[in-house]
Image (cartoon, rainbow, N blue to C red):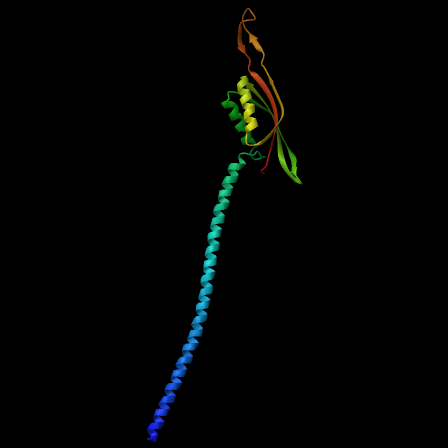
Length: 191
């Protein structure tokens, strides 16, 4: 019986040791996996952060492209050294729509101090237009209401000389058009 008791005790000790080893293994594996799960959570948070950054970057890129388009549209309203030719062509187009003949007499550019040390380009233009009086007045009105900062230096309107053809002074065949000499400045805001 002693033998049987020893065998049961030995089996009981063996089972206890095995259970203890199993329990220690389970605790070890639990700690290992729990640290891996924490690392996995950190990695998932990092991935989410990178995805959010990529999304913000995409939004920023779209915003920059949109602002570039808006700046190009807005830039058409301001005259700068790159758009001077475009601006003059627009003046000629407006004069043509009003049946006026436009002659560009002079264009000059100087730096103009606006705020502190900030300097912008100031364009001095002198043009001559000829045509009907009402059309000249409309042209001047268009210059005044253009979406640019325009300052008139001088405006002179004169009637063309009438040429009479025939035997009496009452037989006027052609009337020369009205003529206007306009000097104005346009301040640039965008370089």
